[in-house]
Structure formats: C-alpha cells, structure tokens
Length: 472
Image (cartoon, rainbow, N blue to C red; front, side, top):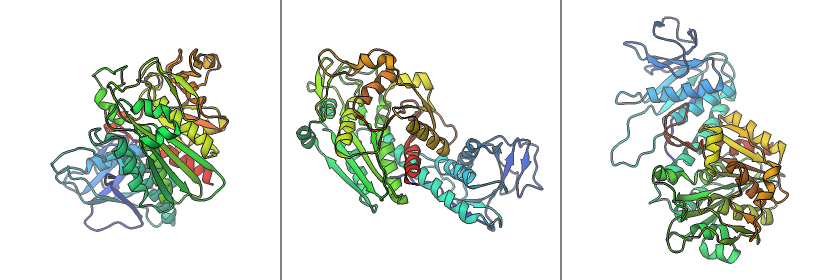
C-alpha cells in the first residue's frame, strides 16, 4: 500500500520503438501524428481507444476536450493498454491546445484508470507502466510537468483512500486503520501522528466513540494527524472511521452489508489528504482527526433509548444504533473546537442513505454554516474532478434536534440528510464548518471516467485542493 499507479512524464520528443497515441476530437479531427491514419472507424468519442491495424499506433478519442472528457480518455487509454500484450510504455502526442488544466485532467484519469484492488494469490493482469506526454517544442514543458506532478499527487491520494476503504474488515479494525495511517505519516517530514486507545477515550469522555465501539471485541481508536507548514490558517479535517458497520442492534439487512467495509471512506479521505499535504509541503497548518470504531452487535452494544455523553459534556438520546457516524463525529468535532482553535472545520462521512436518494451516486452533498466555505468546497471539487451540491440547513427543522431527556436527538424527524447535518452543527460551535456527506459517491458498482468498481476515494482530492486554496 498504496497501490502502484501508472507513471507519467512530460517531454518534447518521442521515443523510438515505442507505441504512439494520436488524439482524436469528435468529428473526427486527428492531432499530431495522425496525417496518414485510417479514420474509417474513428469517431473521436471520449475514451474511444483503437489500435491501427498492423501498427503500434493507437488513436484515443478526447471528445470535445473538456476536463471530464480528458479524464475519461486518460483512464480508457490505460485500460486499453492492458492484457498479455500490454506495452511497458507509450508516447501520447498532445495537441497544441493542452494547457496545465488539461494535462492535470488527463494525468488524473491515466493514473487512476488502471487501479485494481484484489486479494489474490495470482499475479495481476499486465498493464502499461508509464506514459510520456509529448508536447513538441512549445516552451511550456516545465509548466506542464508541474501540472502532471500535481495530478499524480492527487491520484496517489485517491488511490490510497481507495486502498484503505477496500481493505476487508477482517484485516481492517480500528487499530489497523489508525496505526497504518500513523506508520505512513511517520515517513513524511512535518507530519506527526498520535493514536489514542480506549482507555484514553474513556478518560477524556469520548462517549460517542465508546458507545459505537462498545459492541465489538476490537476496541476503538482516535487518530490525530498534525501537519504544520506555517501560514496563518489552521484547517481541521474530520473523517468518519467506522471500519465495519453492522448497524448494531438496529441491524442492517444482509443485502449490501458486505459493502460496509467502506464505511470509513471519509476517514480514508482525511488520512490521504493529510499525507498529500505533507508531501507537497503546503504552507498551512492542517489537522486530521479520525475517530475509528467498529459498530457490532453483542451484549455490550449501545441501545436505542440510551443517553450518551459526548466529549465536552453534551448529551445525545440514541434512537437508532445504525446512525453511528454522527455519534463519533460529534466527539471529534467537540474535541477540535475546544482544543485546536481551528479557523474552519470540515467533516467527511458516508453518513446518510438520504443523500444517495437526493443526489445519486456521483455527487457529494455540502452542508455549511458559511457561504464562502461551501463555495470553496464546490470550487475545489470542480478543479479536481469531484462534483458537490450544496444542501440547505433548514431552519424549520432546527427545533426537532432537541430531546426531551437529553440535549439532542440522534435522529431528528424530517429529511434524513438535513437533520443529520443539523445535529452535527450543534458540535461546531462558532467555527466556520462544512459537512460533506459522501454516502453516494464513496462507492461504485461499475466503471466510469477514472472510477472503477469498489471504493472511489471520493473527497480526498477536494480536501487537498481546499488546503491549497487556504495556503495561498
């Protein structure tokens, strides 16, 4: 870990005896190297990868060269250059209109399109190992090289987030997730990791984490990653780290429960983002918090009707043990606000099925108390190929968060994604805060664009781009 990705370099010249890839826009119109090619089967549709008969020349459709088309094209090329006769490398002949943004999109797709996670004793299928993007003598190769390096860093973070979420839960318990992240952090300058155990959690009063993790023989952990690159802003990212979710006493249906190994996708995004920020040595302070627990069923499981005391003293009336994510996030948010003096807090979680219904499986939900922060999240996502949609914190449902026997209700009545966000808002204090619900886009059942089936790594790139924005 992390999974090895396709390497990409930028150069001004092609190589001898290396397969060449000619780009085709819709029409089709062929780019450099395409003058003598047979166009009878070429449409230029984004992702259409065709080999010219009897040659080592490929054509690759890039559609209308939108950033989405280019991510799709890069991913499709790597998938096409796979199998028993896969070349070790290939030259992609860029068209003159390729700027830094287009290179980033293409490299992101190429690096992630061939991602594969499979626990097996067999060798994986062969795949192209590297690509050279050939610009010609444009004078922009340094700018494009920088763009390619940034894209590859984003892809590496996405890949690690996928690896963490795809890891089976017989391996991935709270201790494994926290210590794996700490081990990776120890290799990077400026990034430190502290892993707290269940005894510390009890001493400090992390009642939400302890309640959720109480039903498992594998006790909870609390991961704190700290990166200080200077600068005036302090960002805190908080990720849900539920390493497996049975639903607890409010048990889930059997169908689909196996996918709950990915219920820590928010935590994986935060871990990957902190590692990427440290690798890139961004001039900003960022803390990542991941409350890690396994929501299991046993005689020590927490119950509907329980009242749980969170870090800082606020209490919650439990109504559904399958709404465990907000219980652990509440502790972490209260800890961040009290101890870390953040300038903003962003939490990321596979939190509610309601958002899958509302926004589908490719768009994340943004809830925020700050218009500027919500806009920054959406803009950051657009720059790195992750789609977000702002959802409202409806005033008419605020009163329903109050409980008759505790401070708050865990599952207030009303629209589930919105009331979950309103519950979390109670723990954000006066700090600008955004809640990112990634229940839909965190997993995929099919291949599209740069995404493959399984965990998608969604959210990691947005957090990195957000950190970069605030570091400027």
